[in-house]
Length: 361
Picture 1 (cartoon, rainbow, N blue to C red):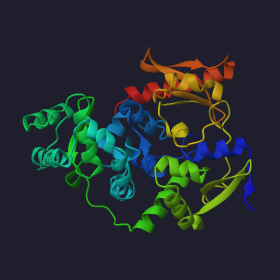
Picture 2: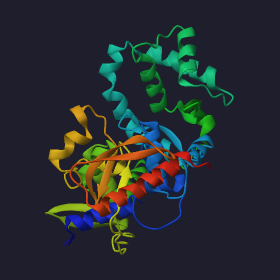
Picture 3: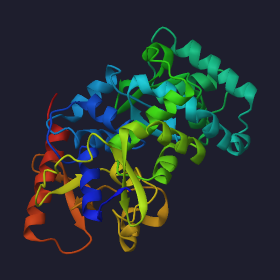
């Protein structure tokens, strides 16, 4: 029978397994490896999602990891941009890309993106980027236009999206305030080959290690595998996982971390970025975010998640970028009145964010 845990312990384990709390020196690649993939559709927020989990590193350090290919940014699953390790992207795409591309067929028809157009775009990408050439999004759009492929009204974005899902391109080194587009095969050496069962097992082990405790449905939602494939991955990984029971629901977590003593940090209020894995890494979020406050985090229910304040494992408010004496900092917007200790605790997190943004590598 699975061990029973209460909500406090469940959230403690998530904070620890997501590297938000706990000790240890780590770099950008260590963080990304632990969580397998970190949401990065908002580039700046994605950088802080790595930084908040690796105290002592700077924004420049994370950009350096991206510029050297130690970490890459692409669309491994859900049609969403993530940071992943270069050795993980291809085997994830092998499991997810077919379903993701199938889900886009209606949109492709709306944009008149047929097989002939997409094949032509692939040829343009290969000829434009070969020889380790790096170009910005604007320059790549210009190359498509010159080749007779219109890119207006989001058409160009969906072409890049398709090329990434089919393993042609990914985002590479810094290019102004964003990243350059590069050929995947030139930027990322071929990684280890995994057969389907090995890949499903790896997916499950890595998800539940970096996000656990989590449910099977959480895993299926996050990965966008079919429930059948998610269940198969879970079964293949059971020798490395432990099942816990919370409110008669099974939650899975790495057996290596389930019994680790929690550091029990007091009066910590974390400034986590928008779209952070701590909230978006799960289908069921009621443990983390009270329903009455959801509108404050996702205004208008438009898919845009604001940066969040987390106290005792729960979302206690949002925050915004503001100008501080030392540069950019975090300004609290709590759901309710904060105790003096919490105000001071958030101020410390704001200082950490300010340092991350301003310090040099």
